[in-house]
Length: 165
Image 1: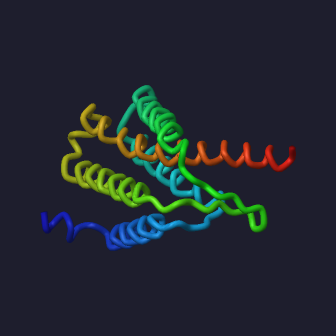
Image 2: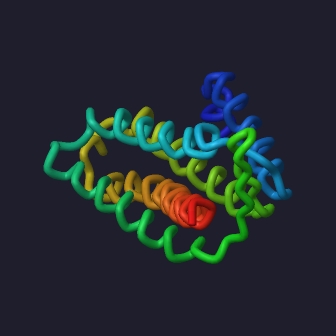
Image 3: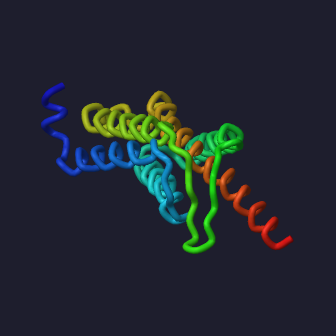
C-alpha cells in the first residue's frame, strides 16, 4: 500500500487538496459564475472518456454515456428545489451551501485513483466488465453535477422570463 502512495505523482495530491478546498468552499453559501459552475463536470467527463477510450471498444463506451445521462436525470430531480439567487450585474449565481460537492468530488477522485492504480498494477484487466462498471460510477456522480446545473439553468431561464414579463 505504501508503495502505491509513494509511486503516485505529486500533482495528484495537489489535485486532491484543490478538490477538498473547493468542496469546503462549496459547503457555505457562495457566489459563482456559470463558467466556474460547469467547468468541473466538463473536466471530469473529458477525463473519464479519455481514460476509458484506450481500454474499451466504442460500443461499450455507450455505457459511460448512459451513466452520465442517468446521473443527469437524477441530479435534475434531486436538486430541483435547491435555493438559488441570480444576479444580473455581474452575472452570478448565489448557491446555498452544500456538502454534496465535497463528497462527490472525493468519491470521483477515489474511484479514478483506484482505476489508475488498478490499470497500472493489473494491465491484464484491461477491458474487463468489472472495471467498466467502476468507470461508470464517476460519470454517474458527474451526471449529478450536470443535472444540478441543468436544474439551476432552468430556474435561471424562468427568472429571466419573469423579469421580461
